[in-house]
Every structure is written in structure tokens, then in C-alpha cells.
Image (cartoon, rainbow, N blue to C red; front, side, top):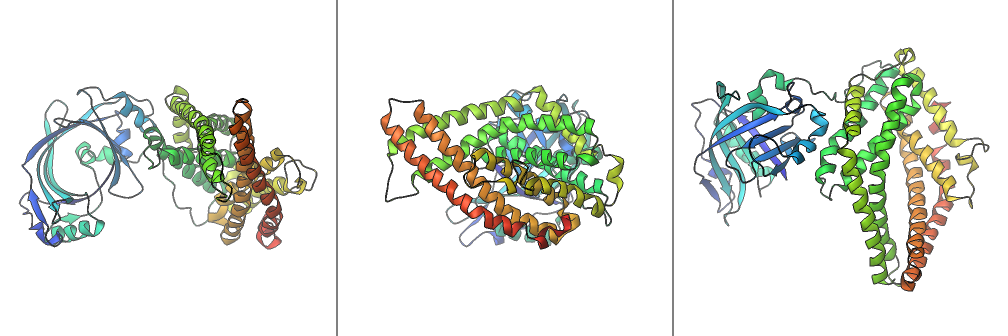
Amino acid sequence: MVEEERKYAVDDGWVLPDLAGAAPTGGGVRARPAATLVATYHDTVDLRLARAGVSLRHRQGDDLPWTVKLPTDSPGVRHEISRAGAAGAPPAELVELVTVFHRGAPLAPAAVVRTVREAYDVHDADGTVLAEVVDDHVTVEKVDGTATGAFRELEVERKAGDRNLLDRIGTLLRTAGARGGGFTPKHVRALGPAAEGEPDLVPPRSLPAAPTAGDVVTEAVRREVRRLLAHDPLARQRLAGDDGRTAVHQMRVACRRLRADLKTFSRLLRPDWARPLRDELTWLADALGDARDAEVLRERLRRTATADPTSPLDGEAVDRLDEVLARRQEEALAAVDAALRSERYVALVEALVLAARSPLLTRRAGRPAGRVLPRLVARRWRRLAGDGSRPGSVSALEQDGRDEQWHEVRKEGKRVRAAVKSVTPVLGEDARELNRRLGRVQDLLGEHQDAAVAADTWLSVADSRPADHALAVTAGRLAERERTVVRRVRAEFPAAWRRASRRRRTRWLR
């Protein structure tokens, strides 16, 4: 569930205004009975969850008393996951959910928040609740029950209404003297200044006016580490809106780009530090990749099967193919879950947090970015463009060459594009334009790879069931459609590559 709310600070003597003016025509405001809520927040000794904007609490009286709240990129919007369980020990599922934040450190009660809540529902003419406004008188207690502080705040939570309604309510509250501002959760206020400290995972920052090569590499590492770890809870709980598939894909992309950057900028990084990190990222990417590949194949199966309405395929045979892929996907997702629960993964997360904080750089990384980085990217570019002698380069591609040869070019192209993207903040429009053109090249090579793998998959499934003649015929027709795509991509590729590799777009590499 996604929770969207806004907070306002008020003094003890503040009086709630009439909220009916914010309700739509025919609607109104209903007061609910006052309630006392007692929530115990769990955290590590050094408050790793709170500092990351995460909470794990047990609230007495709730049907699902254990709740984790996770931040999103939008202030005031959080993912909320609740589970049943007795007070004392958090459910293992929720502890796993926040693995990237506690990283194996023990969780224990950190604070008790006692809230006397007066709540009001803003509803429409049909009685549907559009927004909830709560007036909370909060007392903060130590775990032993000793009161340590108190405050009062308002929360306006979006229900079935839109954000315009939240704006109207906010206007009424501020006019009456409420103070809007930053979104600070109750437990963070309760835990005090230590809970508002810097998170362990250092976020990406703006580059200085005259960045060194190391500054640029550091920000590239931070960006992808943040992407990977931010999607971990979503992948575990399938919270991405499509059963977690987007989250798994984003984690895989982050692994790939991190590995590419660690390789491209290897001369700026201590090899005894970067090489083991790349190896572990490869392990994780492999686990994530099987799940993503199965997902792509299932989507492609339906698209290819319906590509020509004038020549329909056997629907039942297509369903049997999909059943095989569905089993593969479930097995792959189970392997992802096992990997994310492993001690090896926790160790990798710890290494990534440290990497984002301070990657181990060589002396060369202290030189100006504009002098060092183009040369490093150019090395990767030459591997991709080639001179006709290096297998896996564009110049060595053959129109009728093996699919694997085209796939090698695709992989090298991904590394080059990742490198170009990493240096774009320093090198500006030249790098940005090359990145755009390489995007088209990569789209074509990705389509080539997906079609080639799909064709092989359809035929291999049919080969495993030699008695299913309808499946064999359907798989053959599907494979031929995929090979048509392969031939089309190979025909379009030379023009796309010429546009990307024109001298005016690559001169900064020379």
C-alpha cells in the first residue's frame, strides 16, 4: 500500500478550523471517536532505519500490528506494509524487508510513541472518504515508560480524493495558524537529533565547479548503488505495481552499470577493492537476470503470437509454451528471494554502502575530470568500434554472422553507453548527444538479442516435447517470426551506427 500524507505543526492551544469548506459540493466532515495509539518503534543501536527514513513499529490494537514504512522519491509518500504478529519480536518477513537498511545489525525497541488522536473524515456526497485529517497529541517515552517529550501535529492523509483536496485542506489549516514544512515522521521526532543524522547510504550529490575524475566516478557509483538498494524492498515484496518485476529489472540494471563503471574507470580505482566488488555484482546480476529473462520471454511470446492477426497461431499451444515459461519465472524468482536472504548478499550490501561513502581511488583520480575521463571512455569506444580485427566489435560484424557475435557487440555497447552517461555531467552536450544516439543502437541490438533468444527458446521447448505436434508447428512459426525480426534489425543497424559514430559526435573521444 502507498501512503500519501502531509504534516503540520501546531501549538497546544491551537483550534482546528471548520474543514467543511474543503469538501466537495454535497460532502462534509465526520468526526471519529478519539483513540489512544501506543506504538513501539524498533531500530538498531545507531538508528540506521530512522536515519534512512524507514520505520518498523508495533502498534497496539491494530488488526495487523506490525508495520514497515519505506520512503519513496516523493516527500510525504511512503510504501506501507503491515503484518500480524505478537508484540516483542518483529515478523521475520518485515525484518528481511529492511535488510539493506539494518544490514544484519540487531533490531530492538528504541522508543514508544503514545498518541491521543482526534480524527476527521472529509467525504463526498456519497459518504466516500476522500481524506483523513488527524490531530495528534504525542507523548514520547523510553522503553521503560519514562516520558521524555511531547508535541502536537496534524496529518492530512489522502484517501479516495485527489491532491487538490489536500491543497484546499492545507490552505484552511495554514490560515488558522498551522505551520507546514518538511515531512518528519513521528518516530524520527521522538528519537531526537540522532535520528535526523545522515543516512549510512550517502546519496548522490552535485559535482563541484571543477570536479576531479574521482568526483565523477564517486557520483556514478553513488547513483547506481542508490538505485540498487532502493529497489531491494520492492523486489522482496513485489511492490512495484507489476508484481515486483520493475524492481528486479532496476536492480539488474544497477548491477550492470556499476560493473561497467568499475571496469571503464578501473585506472582510477584500486584493483584490490574494485575487482572483488565486480565479482559479487556479477553473482547478484546472474540471479536477477534469470527472473528478468523469463519475464521478457513471456511478454514476447504473447506479442509475437498476435503480431499477424491474418495468420493466427494455435492458442492452446501458445498457452502450453507460456506454462513452461511461467514455471521458469517462478523458479527464477525463488532463486532471487534466496539470494536476497543470503549472508553473501548482506555482505555485498555492506560493501556497497561503504563504496558509496568513499570508493578507494588511485592518485590519478585526483586529476581534472575533463582531462582524464575522455581518454578512459575512448578506450571503451575503440573496443566497441574496432578496426575489423577484433571479434565482437562493430567493424567485425557480419550480416550473416552468428547471433553470439551480435550479442557481444551489444554487451560492449552497454558498457560504452554507461561510461558516456557517467561523464555527461562534466562533458555536457557532446556526451549527451552520443548517449542519445547510442540509445538507438542499443535498442536495435536489444531487440536482436531478445528475438534470437526467443526463437531458440520456442524451438527448445518444442524439442523437449516431441509428441506434441501442435506445439512443434506453433514453435516453428513463432521462431520464424523472430528470425524475421533478427533480419530486419541487422538491415537497420548499419545506418543507426553511422549516425551514432559520426565524427562530430565522437570528436571529444579523439
